Amino acid sequence: MFQPLSLFIGLRYSRANKGNSFISFISFFSIAGIALGVLSLIVVVSVMNGFEAQLKDKILGVIPQVIVSTDGNRTTKWQGLIPELKKHPQINNVQPFVQSQSMIQSSSALEGVMLQGVFKDYYAPIKSSMVIGSWDSLYSKKYGVIVGHYLASKLKVSVGDRVRIMVAGASNYTPIGRMPRNRKFTVVGIFNTGSEIDDKVIFSAGKDAAKLLKLKNNDISGIRLYLEDAFAAPEVSKSLSEQHPEFTITDWRQSYGKLFSAVKMEKRMMWIMLGLIIAVAAFNIVSALVMMVTEKQGEVAILKTQGLDNVTVQKIFMVQGLYNGVWGALSGAVLGVVISIIVNPVLDYFSIDIIGAGYGGLPILMNMSEVVIIALSAIGLSFVATLYPAYKAATIKPVEVLRYE
Image (cartoon, rainbow, N blue to C red):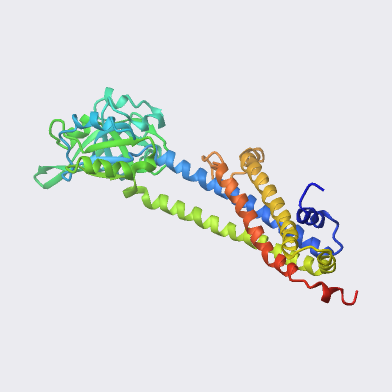
């Protein structure tokens, strides 16, 4: 025999055909419960990871992660600042901009938006999200504007249509009082990012926006910074604030921090709720092992009379409980990984749309380290569940059990 006695006997008990069908029933459902809990947790966590990554790509990939501006909302000495910002190891791209709260009016509707003026020779992430028209048309056509597809639908406009833009950041004096500056623009393109930006932001050439806002030469509203990692924004903001106290440094947490905090909180709650399912299933092992100890107490008493110590008896029933836990955790982990991989192809095959048209299926992003943590946690809970039955087995007194045998 090349294995410890406790392991040999424990595995024999686990694999043997049990005489008590009720114990077999509970053991089976403890394994099935652990497998189902692990499977569910892996699939749900993968979906939540995918959803978080999708938000990061669609929102944080388009909006600036950090904004450099002044308290007066006018930055005049920005040409010398940009080369310095580009040298920062976390900063990928910079984009000077002009912006103002605005109203956009078509023949059909009036909507409140944020007008953003961008400059030709600088990074523009929206460029990759164009669906109609060309981004470069902003600079080739005077007073052109690019709008999101949701906003275009509300305004009932398309490329070539004229809209009126009224800005809150500048005004004209008229015989009837002070009025917001306004000008007609031509729609030269439509973009689609799949986020709320499509409904709330419009883009024009920086010089056209500056002229509408009556800015002086070289005045801008600020500089947008796009980072290697959007979640590094707090550290970058802190370092820039220390280096340039004359500027106001803000990051995406001011506008989207609550959204991502809500997603993280929901992810934690999923961990807790599905973890409790695994815990309940793992502690079914307690019931099965307690009954097994009762059924096997005669055999345990005989083994003790032959010199088996209490520690070895405990190990026997720990091995038996862990056998169920390991099988449940491993089978659940394998099924969870497989289902996460095939769920979207299966849904496509049967033409099942769970989250609505236009989303391209469930967002799945598996993290194998999380899969390992989930499986090991389930095995750990199974081990904890074996402690009490193993202790009870070790306290069996051979004299009392074998007295009437």
